[in-house]
Length: 308
Length: 260
Image (tube, rainbow over the protein chains, first blue to last red):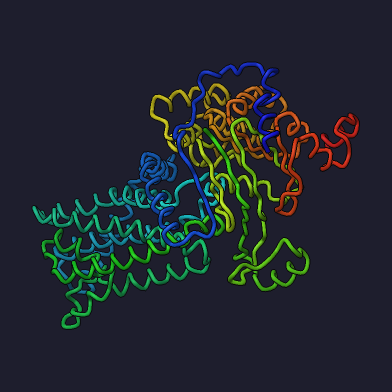
Protein backbone atom coordinates (compact mmCIF):
# COMPACT_ATOMS: atom_id res chain seq x y z
CA UNK A 1 0.00 0.00 0.00
CA UNK A 2 2.71 2.49 1.02
CA UNK A 3 4.83 1.47 -1.93
CA UNK A 4 2.01 2.23 -4.30
CA UNK A 5 1.32 5.57 -2.68
CA UNK A 6 4.95 6.66 -3.04
CA UNK A 7 4.99 5.51 -6.60
CA UNK A 8 1.92 7.63 -7.20
CA UNK A 9 3.41 10.73 -5.63
CA UNK A 10 6.50 10.58 -7.81
CA UNK A 11 4.76 10.40 -11.13
CA UNK A 12 1.20 11.37 -10.58
CA UNK A 13 0.08 10.83 -14.16
CA UNK A 14 2.65 9.74 -16.69
CA UNK A 15 0.82 11.49 -19.54
CA UNK A 16 1.20 14.85 -17.81
CA UNK A 17 4.42 15.83 -19.54
CA UNK A 18 3.23 14.97 -23.03
CA UNK A 19 -0.20 16.61 -22.83
CA UNK A 20 -0.42 20.00 -24.54
CA UNK A 21 -1.97 22.72 -22.40
CA UNK A 22 -5.71 22.90 -22.91
CA UNK A 23 -6.93 25.88 -24.93
CA UNK A 24 -9.71 26.54 -22.50
CA UNK A 25 -7.63 25.75 -19.46
CA UNK A 26 -8.25 28.98 -17.57
CA UNK A 27 -12.00 28.90 -18.07
CA UNK A 28 -12.39 25.73 -16.06
CA UNK A 29 -14.08 25.72 -12.73
CA UNK A 30 -13.25 23.96 -9.56
CA UNK A 31 -16.25 22.16 -8.13
CA UNK A 32 -17.43 23.85 -4.98
CA UNK A 33 -17.94 22.20 -1.63
CA UNK A 34 -14.33 21.11 -1.37
CA UNK A 35 -14.61 20.27 2.30
CA UNK A 36 -17.45 17.81 1.94
CA UNK A 37 -17.19 14.36 3.41
CA UNK A 38 -19.49 11.60 2.26
CA UNK A 39 -19.91 8.49 4.31
CA UNK A 40 -22.16 5.57 3.48
CA UNK A 41 -22.09 2.66 5.82
CA UNK A 42 -24.19 -0.47 5.83
CA UNK A 43 -26.22 -1.72 8.74
CA UNK A 44 -27.14 1.66 10.20
CA UNK A 45 -29.57 1.85 13.08
CA UNK A 46 -32.63 4.10 12.97
CA UNK A 47 -30.71 7.13 14.27
CA UNK A 48 -28.07 6.71 11.57
CA UNK A 49 -30.68 6.45 8.85
CA UNK A 50 -32.50 9.46 10.25
CA UNK A 51 -29.29 11.46 10.10
CA UNK A 52 -28.91 10.59 6.41
CA UNK A 53 -32.57 11.42 5.74
CA UNK A 54 -32.11 14.81 7.42
CA UNK A 55 -28.95 15.38 5.37
CA UNK A 56 -31.01 14.57 2.27
CA UNK A 57 -33.54 17.27 3.18
CA UNK A 58 -30.80 19.76 4.04
CA UNK A 59 -29.09 19.16 0.72
CA UNK A 60 -32.34 19.66 -1.20
CA UNK A 61 -32.73 22.96 0.64
CA UNK A 62 -29.17 23.93 -0.25
CA UNK A 63 -29.97 23.15 -3.90
CA UNK A 64 -33.23 25.12 -3.83
CA UNK A 65 -32.17 27.24 -6.80
CA UNK A 66 -31.81 24.04 -8.78
CA UNK A 67 -35.28 22.96 -7.64
CA UNK A 68 -36.70 26.26 -8.84
CA UNK A 69 -34.92 26.02 -12.18
CA UNK A 70 -36.02 22.40 -12.69
CA UNK A 71 -39.66 23.20 -11.91
CA UNK A 72 -39.76 26.15 -14.31
CA UNK A 73 -37.95 24.23 -17.03
CA UNK A 74 -40.47 21.39 -16.66
CA UNK A 75 -43.26 23.86 -17.43
CA UNK A 76 -41.26 25.42 -20.23
CA UNK A 77 -40.39 22.06 -21.81
CA UNK A 78 -43.99 20.87 -21.59
CA UNK A 79 -45.32 23.91 -23.43
CA UNK A 80 -42.41 24.60 -25.74
CA UNK A 81 -43.76 25.71 -29.12
CA UNK A 82 -47.29 26.16 -27.82
CA UNK A 83 -48.89 29.57 -28.28
CA UNK A 84 -50.77 29.81 -25.00
CA UNK A 85 -48.23 27.81 -23.01
CA UNK A 86 -49.34 27.03 -19.47
CA UNK A 87 -52.44 29.14 -20.04
CA UNK A 88 -53.86 26.13 -21.87
CA UNK A 89 -54.35 24.73 -18.39
CA UNK A 90 -56.17 27.86 -17.34
CA UNK A 91 -58.33 27.66 -20.40
CA UNK A 92 -59.22 24.00 -19.98
CA UNK A 93 -59.94 24.54 -16.29
CA UNK A 94 -62.19 27.49 -17.19
CA UNK A 95 -64.11 25.43 -19.75
CA UNK A 96 -64.50 22.59 -17.24
CA UNK A 97 -65.68 24.91 -14.47
CA UNK A 98 -68.28 26.68 -16.58
CA UNK A 99 -69.54 23.52 -18.30
CA UNK A 100 -69.85 21.53 -15.05
CA UNK A 101 -71.14 24.60 -13.21
CA UNK A 102 -74.02 25.14 -15.58
CA UNK A 103 -74.82 21.44 -15.85
CA UNK A 104 -74.80 20.64 -12.14
CA UNK A 105 -76.49 23.82 -11.01
CA UNK A 106 -79.38 22.75 -13.24
CA UNK A 107 -79.26 19.11 -12.07
CA UNK A 108 -78.97 19.93 -8.35
CA UNK A 109 -81.29 22.97 -8.78
CA UNK A 110 -78.70 25.25 -7.23
CA UNK A 111 -78.14 28.96 -7.51
CA UNK A 112 -75.30 29.54 -9.99
CA UNK A 113 -74.30 32.55 -7.91
CA UNK A 114 -73.20 30.40 -4.97
CA UNK A 115 -72.47 27.17 -6.83
CA UNK A 116 -70.03 28.36 -9.50
CA UNK A 117 -67.50 30.00 -7.11
CA UNK A 118 -67.66 26.84 -4.95
CA UNK A 119 -67.13 24.57 -7.94
CA UNK A 120 -64.39 26.71 -9.45
CA UNK A 121 -62.36 26.71 -6.26
CA UNK A 122 -62.96 23.01 -5.60
CA UNK A 123 -61.96 21.95 -9.09
CA UNK A 124 -58.79 24.04 -9.10
CA UNK A 125 -57.77 22.52 -5.76
CA UNK A 126 -58.69 19.05 -6.98
CA UNK A 127 -56.59 19.52 -10.12
CA UNK A 128 -53.66 20.41 -7.89
CA UNK A 129 -54.14 17.33 -5.72
CA UNK A 130 -54.76 15.05 -8.68
CA UNK A 131 -51.65 16.10 -10.57
CA UNK A 132 -49.53 15.96 -7.39
CA UNK A 133 -50.64 12.37 -6.90
CA UNK A 134 -50.12 11.42 -10.56
CA UNK A 135 -46.67 13.03 -10.69
CA UNK A 136 -45.80 11.69 -7.24
CA UNK A 137 -46.51 8.09 -8.29
CA UNK A 138 -43.90 8.27 -11.05
CA UNK A 139 -41.73 10.79 -9.21
CA UNK A 140 -38.69 8.54 -8.84
CA UNK A 141 -39.27 6.00 -11.60
CA UNK A 142 -39.22 8.57 -14.43
CA UNK A 143 -35.98 9.98 -13.05
CA UNK A 144 -34.28 6.58 -13.19
CA UNK A 145 -31.51 7.77 -15.53
CA UNK A 146 -30.65 10.75 -13.36
CA UNK A 147 -30.85 8.78 -10.12
CA UNK A 148 -28.38 6.24 -11.51
CA UNK A 149 -25.93 8.77 -12.87
CA UNK A 150 -25.84 11.54 -10.26
CA UNK A 151 -26.08 11.58 -6.52
CA UNK A 152 -28.95 13.95 -5.79
CA UNK A 153 -31.04 14.23 -2.66
CA UNK A 154 -34.25 12.28 -3.16
CA UNK A 155 -36.32 14.98 -1.51
CA UNK A 156 -35.20 17.28 -4.33
CA UNK A 157 -37.27 15.25 -6.80
CA UNK A 158 -40.33 15.64 -4.56
CA UNK A 159 -39.74 19.36 -4.03
CA UNK A 160 -39.49 19.84 -7.78
CA UNK A 161 -42.84 18.11 -8.34
CA UNK A 162 -44.51 20.20 -5.65
CA UNK A 163 -43.12 23.45 -7.02
CA UNK A 164 -44.02 22.55 -10.59
CA UNK A 165 -47.60 21.86 -9.59
CA UNK A 166 -47.70 25.01 -7.54
CA UNK A 167 -46.79 26.99 -10.67
CA UNK A 168 -49.60 25.27 -12.57
CA UNK A 169 -51.93 25.99 -9.65
CA UNK A 170 -50.92 29.65 -9.88
CA UNK A 171 -52.10 29.68 -13.50
CA UNK A 172 -55.37 27.94 -12.66
CA UNK A 173 -56.14 30.35 -9.83
CA UNK A 174 -56.90 32.91 -12.55
CA UNK A 175 -60.13 30.98 -13.25
CA UNK A 176 -61.22 31.35 -9.62
CA UNK A 177 -60.38 35.04 -9.64
CA UNK A 178 -62.49 35.57 -12.77
CA UNK A 179 -65.43 33.59 -11.37
CA UNK A 180 -65.25 35.53 -8.09
CA UNK A 181 -65.12 38.80 -10.03
CA UNK A 182 -68.13 37.85 -12.17
CA UNK A 183 -70.23 37.12 -9.11
CA UNK A 184 -68.84 40.04 -7.15
CA UNK A 185 -67.39 37.91 -4.35
CA UNK A 186 -64.59 39.49 -2.35
CA UNK A 187 -63.37 37.42 0.60
CA UNK A 188 -61.62 40.46 2.15
CA UNK A 189 -59.58 39.85 5.28
CA UNK A 190 -60.71 36.22 5.48
CA UNK A 191 -58.36 35.73 2.53
CA UNK A 192 -55.63 35.71 5.17
CA UNK A 193 -57.28 32.74 6.87
CA UNK A 194 -56.66 30.70 3.73
CA UNK A 195 -52.90 31.29 3.98
CA UNK A 196 -52.18 28.82 6.80
CA UNK A 197 -54.47 26.34 5.07
CA UNK A 198 -52.47 26.59 1.84
CA UNK A 199 -49.25 26.31 3.85
CA UNK A 200 -50.57 23.05 5.31
CA UNK A 201 -51.38 21.90 1.78
CA UNK A 202 -47.79 22.62 0.76
CA UNK A 203 -46.32 20.52 3.57
CA UNK A 204 -48.77 17.71 2.88
CA UNK A 205 -48.04 17.87 -0.84
CA UNK A 206 -44.32 17.37 -0.18
CA UNK A 207 -44.90 14.46 2.18
CA UNK A 208 -47.44 12.86 -0.17
CA UNK A 209 -45.17 13.13 -3.22
CA UNK A 210 -42.22 11.64 -1.37
CA UNK A 211 -44.31 8.77 0.01
CA UNK A 212 -46.05 7.91 -3.25
CA UNK A 213 -42.77 8.15 -5.16
CA UNK A 214 -41.08 5.66 -2.83
CA UNK A 215 -43.99 3.21 -2.59
CA UNK A 216 -44.67 3.27 -6.32
CA UNK A 217 -40.99 2.68 -7.12
CA UNK A 218 -41.01 -0.47 -5.02
CA UNK A 219 -44.48 -1.80 -5.86
CA UNK A 220 -45.38 -1.22 -9.49
CA UNK A 221 -49.03 -2.14 -8.90
CA UNK A 222 -49.64 0.89 -6.73
CA UNK A 223 -50.10 3.62 -9.40
CA UNK A 224 -53.28 2.07 -10.93
CA UNK A 225 -54.65 1.45 -7.43
CA UNK A 226 -53.95 5.07 -6.47
CA UNK A 227 -55.62 6.27 -9.68
CA UNK A 228 -58.84 4.39 -8.95
CA UNK A 229 -58.83 5.50 -5.29
CA UNK A 230 -58.52 9.09 -6.49
CA UNK A 231 -61.41 8.65 -8.89
CA UNK A 232 -63.63 7.27 -6.16
CA UNK A 233 -62.51 10.02 -3.78
CA UNK A 234 -63.48 12.63 -6.34
CA UNK A 235 -67.08 11.47 -6.37
CA UNK A 236 -67.56 10.60 -2.69
CA UNK A 237 -66.00 13.83 -1.44
CA UNK A 238 -67.83 17.14 -1.65
CA UNK A 239 -65.86 18.49 -4.61
CA UNK A 240 -68.56 18.97 -7.23
CA UNK A 241 -71.45 18.68 -4.78
CA UNK A 242 -71.85 20.99 -1.84
CA UNK A 243 -71.51 19.48 1.64
CA UNK A 244 -74.90 20.93 2.62
CA UNK A 245 -76.54 18.35 0.33
CA UNK A 246 -75.72 15.71 2.97
CA UNK A 247 -78.29 17.38 5.24
CA UNK A 248 -78.44 15.58 8.62
CA UNK A 249 -75.66 13.17 7.59
CA UNK A 250 -73.19 16.07 7.22
CA UNK A 251 -71.76 15.33 10.67
CA UNK A 252 -69.89 12.35 9.22
CA UNK A 253 -68.06 14.45 6.64
CA UNK A 254 -65.00 15.35 8.76
CA UNK A 255 -64.09 11.65 8.67
CA UNK A 256 -63.17 12.21 5.04
CA UNK A 257 -59.63 13.67 4.96
CA UNK A 258 -60.28 15.25 1.57
CA UNK A 259 -63.27 17.12 2.97
CA UNK A 260 -61.32 18.52 5.93
CA UNK A 261 -58.40 19.66 3.77
CA UNK A 262 -60.61 21.19 1.09
CA UNK A 263 -62.87 22.93 3.55
CA UNK A 264 -60.07 24.74 5.44
CA UNK A 265 -59.21 26.47 2.13
CA UNK A 266 -62.74 26.87 0.76
CA UNK A 267 -64.37 28.05 3.97
CA UNK A 268 -62.53 31.37 4.37
CA UNK A 269 -62.49 32.11 0.64
CA UNK A 270 -66.21 31.53 0.15
CA UNK A 271 -67.00 33.44 3.31
CA UNK A 272 -68.37 30.44 5.23
CA UNK A 273 -65.60 30.27 7.82
CA UNK A 274 -64.10 27.04 9.15
CA UNK A 275 -65.01 25.25 12.34
CA UNK A 276 -62.29 24.39 14.86
CA UNK A 277 -63.27 20.75 14.43
CA UNK A 278 -62.40 20.82 10.75
CA UNK A 279 -59.04 22.43 11.40
CA UNK A 280 -58.35 19.84 14.08
CA UNK A 281 -59.26 17.07 11.64
CA UNK A 282 -57.11 18.55 8.88
CA UNK A 283 -54.15 18.87 11.26
CA UNK A 284 -54.63 15.33 12.53
CA UNK A 285 -54.71 13.84 9.01
CA UNK A 286 -51.66 15.91 8.05
CA UNK A 287 -49.76 14.82 11.16
CA UNK A 288 -50.53 11.20 10.35
CA UNK A 289 -49.34 11.67 6.77
CA UNK A 290 -46.15 13.39 7.92
CA UNK A 291 -45.30 10.68 10.45
CA UNK A 292 -45.87 7.87 7.96
CA UNK A 293 -44.02 9.73 5.25
CA UNK A 294 -41.01 10.55 7.42
CA UNK A 295 -40.66 7.07 8.86
CA UNK A 296 -40.92 5.55 5.41
CA UNK A 297 -38.39 7.98 3.97
CA UNK A 298 -35.89 7.31 6.76
CA UNK A 299 -36.31 3.59 6.19
CA UNK A 300 -36.17 3.34 2.40
CA UNK A 301 -34.10 6.35 1.24
CA UNK A 302 -30.95 4.27 0.81
CA UNK A 303 -32.81 1.61 -1.18
CA UNK A 304 -34.53 3.92 -3.67
CA UNK A 305 -31.66 3.83 -6.17
CA UNK A 306 -32.08 0.02 -6.38
CA UNK A 307 -35.85 0.23 -6.84
CA UNK A 308 -36.20 2.66 -9.71
CA UNK B 1 -7.12 16.65 1.47
CA UNK B 2 -9.08 14.23 -0.65
CA UNK B 3 -9.38 10.57 0.21
CA UNK B 4 -11.40 7.55 -0.79
CA UNK B 5 -11.95 4.64 1.50
CA UNK B 6 -13.83 1.42 0.82
CA UNK B 7 -14.06 -1.01 3.72
CA UNK B 8 -15.26 -4.50 2.78
CA UNK B 9 -18.01 -3.01 0.65
CA UNK B 10 -20.78 -5.34 -0.47
CA UNK B 11 -23.67 -4.41 -2.72
CA UNK B 12 -26.69 -6.58 -3.55
CA UNK B 13 -29.22 -5.89 -6.24
CA UNK B 14 -32.68 -6.99 -5.28
CA UNK B 15 -34.61 -8.64 -8.09
CA UNK B 16 -38.07 -7.25 -7.50
CA UNK B 17 -39.55 -6.64 -10.86
CA UNK B 18 -38.94 -9.88 -12.68
CA UNK B 19 -41.02 -12.96 -12.12
CA UNK B 20 -39.30 -13.68 -8.85
CA UNK B 21 -40.32 -17.31 -8.67
CA UNK B 22 -39.26 -18.67 -12.02
CA UNK B 23 -36.31 -16.34 -11.96
CA UNK B 24 -35.31 -17.84 -8.65
CA UNK B 25 -35.42 -21.37 -9.96
CA UNK B 26 -33.55 -20.85 -13.20
CA UNK B 27 -31.14 -18.20 -12.09
CA UNK B 28 -30.09 -19.97 -8.91
CA UNK B 29 -29.35 -23.06 -10.89
CA UNK B 30 -27.43 -21.31 -13.63
CA UNK B 31 -25.54 -18.47 -12.01
CA UNK B 32 -24.55 -20.28 -8.87
CA UNK B 33 -22.78 -17.94 -6.56
CA UNK B 34 -23.60 -14.61 -8.21
CA UNK B 35 -27.19 -14.89 -7.03
CA UNK B 36 -28.10 -15.34 -3.47
CA UNK B 37 -30.69 -14.57 -0.85
CA UNK B 38 -30.63 -11.77 1.66
CA UNK B 39 -31.82 -11.95 5.25
CA UNK B 40 -35.46 -11.68 4.16
CA UNK B 41 -35.05 -14.50 1.59
CA UNK B 42 -35.31 -12.16 -1.38
CA UNK B 43 -33.37 -13.10 -4.48
CA UNK B 44 -30.46 -10.73 -4.96
CA UNK B 45 -27.60 -10.36 -7.39
CA UNK B 46 -24.35 -10.13 -5.47
CA UNK B 47 -22.82 -7.27 -7.39
CA UNK B 48 -19.92 -6.52 -5.03
CA UNK B 49 -18.44 -8.66 -2.31
CA UNK B 50 -16.13 -7.30 0.40
CA UNK B 51 -14.22 -4.86 -1.75
CA UNK B 52 -11.64 -2.92 0.26
CA UNK B 53 -9.09 -0.30 -0.69
CA UNK B 54 -7.94 3.16 0.38
CA UNK B 55 -6.85 5.95 -1.94
CA UNK B 56 -4.85 9.07 -1.12
CA UNK B 57 -4.03 12.15 -3.20
CA UNK B 58 -1.98 11.12 -6.21
CA UNK B 59 -3.54 7.69 -6.46
CA UNK B 60 -4.93 6.68 -9.85
CA UNK B 61 -6.93 3.50 -9.53
CA UNK B 62 -7.91 1.52 -12.61
CA UNK B 63 -10.70 -1.05 -12.56
CA UNK B 64 -10.45 -3.99 -14.90
CA UNK B 65 -12.56 -7.08 -15.38
CA UNK B 66 -15.04 -8.64 -17.76
CA UNK B 67 -18.49 -7.17 -18.33
CA UNK B 68 -20.60 -7.61 -15.23
CA UNK B 69 -17.62 -7.95 -12.95
CA UNK B 70 -18.89 -5.03 -10.88
CA UNK B 71 -16.81 -2.12 -12.21
CA UNK B 72 -19.69 0.28 -12.82
CA UNK B 73 -21.43 -0.80 -9.63
CA UNK B 74 -18.27 -0.02 -7.71
CA UNK B 75 -18.10 3.44 -9.31
CA UNK B 76 -21.75 4.07 -8.46
CA UNK B 77 -21.18 2.92 -4.91
CA UNK B 78 -18.19 5.24 -4.52
CA UNK B 79 -20.34 8.03 -5.95
CA UNK B 80 -22.95 7.48 -3.26
CA UNK B 81 -25.61 6.44 -5.76
CA UNK B 82 -25.86 2.88 -4.44
CA UNK B 83 -25.51 2.52 -0.72
CA UNK B 84 -23.67 -0.62 0.38
CA UNK B 85 -25.43 -3.46 2.20
CA UNK B 86 -22.16 -4.33 3.89
CA UNK B 87 -19.10 -2.32 4.86
CA UNK B 88 -18.71 1.40 4.28
CA UNK B 89 -17.55 4.03 1.84
CA UNK B 90 -16.01 7.32 2.92
CA UNK B 91 -15.16 10.04 0.39
CA UNK B 92 -13.49 13.30 1.33
CA UNK B 93 -13.35 16.16 -1.14
CA UNK B 94 -15.41 17.37 -4.06
CA UNK B 95 -16.39 14.63 -6.45
CA UNK B 96 -17.36 14.37 -10.09
CA UNK B 97 -18.90 11.21 -11.49
CA UNK B 98 -18.81 10.58 -15.22
CA UNK B 99 -20.84 7.46 -15.75
CA UNK B 100 -22.82 7.81 -18.95
CA UNK B 101 -22.67 10.32 -21.79
CA UNK B 102 -26.05 11.80 -20.92
CA UNK B 103 -24.96 12.83 -17.41
CA UNK B 104 -28.62 12.92 -16.46
CA UNK B 105 -29.23 15.66 -19.02
CA UNK B 106 -32.85 16.28 -19.95
CA UNK B 107 -33.49 15.70 -23.69
CA UNK B 108 -36.44 18.09 -23.73
CA UNK B 109 -34.32 21.03 -22.63
CA UNK B 110 -31.84 23.02 -24.68
CA UNK B 111 -28.09 22.64 -24.32
CA UNK B 112 -27.91 25.98 -22.54
CA UNK B 113 -30.60 24.99 -20.05
CA UNK B 114 -28.84 21.73 -19.34
CA UNK B 115 -25.60 23.59 -18.72
CA UNK B 116 -27.40 25.89 -16.31
CA UNK B 117 -28.89 22.96 -14.40
CA UNK B 118 -25.55 21.23 -14.13
CA UNK B 119 -23.96 24.44 -12.89
CA UNK B 120 -26.60 24.87 -10.21
CA UNK B 121 -26.18 21.24 -9.20
CA UNK B 122 -22.52 22.05 -8.59
CA UNK B 123 -23.46 25.17 -6.67
CA UNK B 124 -21.90 27.71 -9.05
CA UNK B 125 -22.90 31.37 -8.82
CA UNK B 126 -24.24 33.26 -11.84
CA UNK B 127 -20.88 34.71 -12.88
CA UNK B 128 -19.34 31.26 -12.92
CA UNK B 129 -22.39 29.85 -14.71
CA UNK B 130 -21.72 32.32 -17.56
CA UNK B 131 -18.07 31.30 -17.70
CA UNK B 132 -19.08 27.67 -17.78
CA UNK B 133 -21.52 28.37 -20.61
CA UNK B 134 -18.85 30.09 -22.71
CA UNK B 135 -16.34 27.36 -22.00
CA UNK B 136 -18.71 24.54 -22.91
CA UNK B 137 -19.99 26.37 -25.99
CA UNK B 138 -16.47 26.88 -27.31
CA UNK B 139 -15.34 23.38 -26.67
CA UNK B 140 -18.42 21.47 -27.81
CA UNK B 141 -18.70 23.54 -31.03
CA UNK B 142 -22.46 23.32 -31.04
CA UNK B 143 -23.06 26.81 -32.40
CA UNK B 144 -26.73 27.65 -32.61
CA UNK B 145 -27.69 24.16 -31.51
CA UNK B 146 -26.99 25.24 -27.94
CA UNK B 147 -30.40 26.92 -27.90
CA UNK B 148 -32.25 23.90 -29.30
CA UNK B 149 -33.51 20.89 -27.35
CA UNK B 150 -31.12 17.97 -26.95
CA UNK B 151 -33.74 15.73 -28.51
CA UNK B 152 -32.75 16.91 -31.99
CA UNK B 153 -28.97 16.63 -31.46
CA UNK B 154 -27.03 13.89 -33.19
CA UNK B 155 -25.59 11.37 -30.76
CA UNK B 156 -22.13 12.81 -31.40
CA UNK B 157 -23.34 16.26 -30.40
CA UNK B 158 -24.80 14.93 -27.17
CA UNK B 159 -21.49 13.26 -26.36
CA UNK B 160 -19.60 16.49 -27.12
CA UNK B 161 -21.90 18.53 -24.92
CA UNK B 162 -21.77 15.98 -22.12
CA UNK B 163 -18.01 15.74 -22.37
CA UNK B 164 -17.45 19.51 -22.44
CA UNK B 165 -19.77 19.99 -19.50
CA UNK B 166 -18.34 17.15 -17.45
CA UNK B 167 -14.76 18.22 -17.99
CA UNK B 168 -15.42 21.90 -17.29
CA UNK B 169 -15.95 21.26 -13.60
CA UNK B 170 -12.78 20.08 -11.92
CA UNK B 171 -13.22 17.84 -8.90
CA UNK B 172 -10.76 16.55 -6.35
CA UNK B 173 -12.05 13.02 -6.74
CA UNK B 174 -12.84 11.93 -10.27
CA UNK B 175 -14.81 8.75 -10.93
CA UNK B 176 -14.94 7.84 -14.58
CA UNK B 177 -16.45 5.06 -16.66
CA UNK B 178 -14.96 4.02 -19.97
CA UNK B 179 -17.65 5.56 -22.19
CA UNK B 180 -15.73 8.72 -21.64
CA UNK B 181 -12.85 7.45 -23.71
CA UNK B 182 -15.11 6.52 -26.62
CA UNK B 183 -16.09 8.88 -29.40
CA UNK B 184 -15.19 9.77 -32.95
CA UNK B 185 -11.50 10.08 -33.69
CA UNK B 186 -11.50 13.81 -34.53
CA UNK B 187 -13.17 14.72 -31.32
CA UNK B 188 -11.00 12.36 -29.33
CA UNK B 189 -7.84 14.21 -30.37
CA UNK B 190 -9.23 17.45 -29.06
CA UNK B 191 -10.84 15.80 -26.09
CA UNK B 192 -7.81 13.93 -24.83
CA UNK B 193 -5.89 17.09 -23.95
CA UNK B 194 -8.78 18.41 -21.95
CA UNK B 195 -9.44 15.07 -20.32
CA UNK B 196 -5.80 14.61 -19.43
CA UNK B 197 -5.75 18.00 -17.79
CA UNK B 198 -8.76 17.16 -15.68
CA UNK B 199 -7.29 13.81 -14.74
CA UNK B 200 -4.02 15.51 -13.86
CA UNK B 201 -5.70 18.10 -11.69
CA UNK B 202 -7.85 15.61 -9.84
CA UNK B 203 -6.21 14.42 -6.67
CA UNK B 204 -7.71 10.97 -6.98
CA UNK B 205 -8.88 9.13 -10.07
CA UNK B 206 -10.89 5.95 -10.28
CA UNK B 207 -11.19 4.78 -13.87
CA UNK B 208 -13.02 1.79 -15.24
CA UNK B 209 -11.88 0.69 -18.66
CA UNK B 210 -11.35 -2.18 -21.05
CA UNK B 211 -8.56 -0.33 -22.83
CA UNK B 212 -5.34 -1.76 -21.47
CA UNK B 213 -3.13 0.99 -22.90
CA UNK B 214 -5.15 3.68 -21.14
CA UNK B 215 -5.05 1.83 -17.86
CA UNK B 216 -1.32 1.22 -18.18
CA UNK B 217 -0.50 4.88 -18.86
CA UNK B 218 -2.97 6.60 -16.55
CA UNK B 219 -3.17 4.40 -13.52
CA UNK B 220 -0.77 3.78 -10.69
CA UNK B 221 -2.73 0.87 -9.30
CA UNK B 222 -5.06 -1.67 -10.82
CA UNK B 223 -7.91 -3.56 -9.28
CA UNK B 224 -9.02 -6.68 -11.12
CA UNK B 225 -12.63 -7.42 -10.32
CA UNK B 226 -14.17 -10.80 -10.95
CA UNK B 227 -17.76 -11.64 -10.02
CA UNK B 228 -17.88 -8.71 -7.66
CA UNK B 229 -14.73 -9.63 -5.76
CA UNK B 230 -11.20 -8.33 -5.96
CA UNK B 231 -9.22 -10.93 -7.87
CA UNK B 232 -5.99 -8.99 -8.00
CA UNK B 233 -4.62 -5.65 -6.79
CA UNK B 234 -1.28 -4.07 -7.57
CA UNK B 235 0.84 -2.01 -10.00
CA UNK B 236 -0.82 -1.80 -13.46
CA UNK B 237 1.83 -3.70 -15.41
CA UNK B 238 1.80 -6.69 -13.11
CA UNK B 239 -1.98 -6.90 -12.82
CA UNK B 240 -2.43 -6.45 -16.58
CA UNK B 241 0.05 -9.20 -17.30
CA UNK B 242 -1.75 -11.56 -14.99
CA UNK B 243 -5.15 -10.46 -16.37
CA UNK B 244 -4.06 -10.98 -19.98
CA UNK B 245 -2.05 -14.04 -19.13
CA UNK B 246 0.95 -12.81 -21.15
CA UNK B 247 3.68 -10.15 -20.85
CA UNK B 248 2.57 -6.60 -21.74
CA UNK B 249 5.46 -5.85 -24.10
CA UNK B 250 4.43 -8.30 -26.82
CA UNK B 251 3.55 -5.67 -29.43
CA UNK B 252 1.52 -7.66 -32.01
CA UNK B 253 -0.63 -9.37 -29.46
CA UNK B 254 -1.27 -6.13 -27.60
CA UNK B 255 -2.27 -4.38 -30.79
CA UNK B 256 -4.60 -7.22 -31.65
CA UNK B 257 -6.30 -7.07 -28.26
CA UNK B 258 -6.63 -3.31 -28.34
CA UNK B 259 -8.50 -3.27 -31.62
CA UNK B 260 -10.80 -6.10 -30.67
